[in-house]
Amino acid sequence: MKKVLIVGSNGLLGQKISKLFSLSKIYQFLTASIESESYVDDVDYVQLDITNRKNVIGVVEDFEPDVIINTAAVTNVDFCETNKEIAWRVNVKGVENLAYAAKIVGAKVIHFSSDYVFDGKKGSYTETDIPNPASYYGRTKLASENVLKISSLDYTIIRTMILYGVGKNVKDNFAIWVYKNLKENKSIKVVDDQFGNPTLVDDLAYAVLRIVEYDRNGLYHIAGSEIVSRYDFAIAIANQFGFDKKLIVPIKTAILKQSAPRPLRSGFITLKAEVELGIKMSNVRDGVKMFAGQLQNYLNE
Ligand SMILES: NC(=O)c1ccc[n+]([C@@H]2O[C@H](COP(=O)([O-])OP(=O)(O)OC[C@H]3O[C@@H](n4cnc5c(N)ncnc54)[C@H](OP(=O)(O)O)[C@@H]3O)[C@@H](O)[C@H]2O)c1
Image (cartoon, protein in one colour):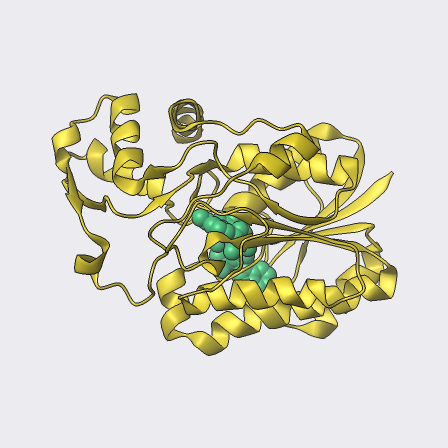
């Protein structure tokens, strides 16, 4: 039985991957994240800080995984812009530590990167387009890719974007933020000049399972099947739940004066992943429908 270590298992993506591996029953897996307890029920869990090399080596040597899946990261892009040292320590040095430990036991590493490695001037992007990050978060993600590229490890890098879904104690993602505000009849300002593929986190978790199953290496762009503006994504959420669309006010990114620059014309072409992994990613309407069902179950739990 292949042994898989899932790092960052308490995050949005980490929880989904952990649950999927738990359901599949064909892998022996261990989950690990920075908190003292697991947010996913009925899985083996160990506390792990990826910035602590000794801690990383200890966990990896004990479990001896064949595959390490790393979802741990500092993901708040504005926080990264103003807390560069922390962002680098987790997003780059943390990956160096995992790569170091992976080499000791001969494990492969599956790691997540972002569309923020691109400047967003000419999306949509394929795997062969040249990165040019505009934000510090984007720079850390590109540097983390390079850690694996220059290692002698087997690796898979998955670039993704605009993850949405539900999970225990996870930070509000865009879809949840829109849902919560519209439900309370609160007006929200949403940018209509940022484009990308909203990605249902369940679809991405399934793609990861395929990557492990098919033992695929290299770089993949994996995201939802449709490129839309944030404004149109918010409208799709309002439509799904029957909320008042007039509460969503379109604005331009420049007006928000956020710390980190955003790639405006982003978006991924995901053909390579679809063909090589045999996956079909949800479009916005179907993804939001599934999200709504999960949210209902989650709120009733
Ligand atoms: N969310 C998106 O829209 C998006 C878009 C593109 C790419 N990605 C990438 O996809 C991956 C997963 O994202 P996500 O949305 O699931 O992120 P998330 O929900 O923020 O999960 C990341 C997890 O890593 C944990 N973590 C932080 N520092 C750690 C450390 N030193 N050691 C161990 N764990 C640590 C976090 O704990 P705390 O919460 O306690 O910090 C959190 O549980 C990341 O690599 C991210 O860069 C995400």
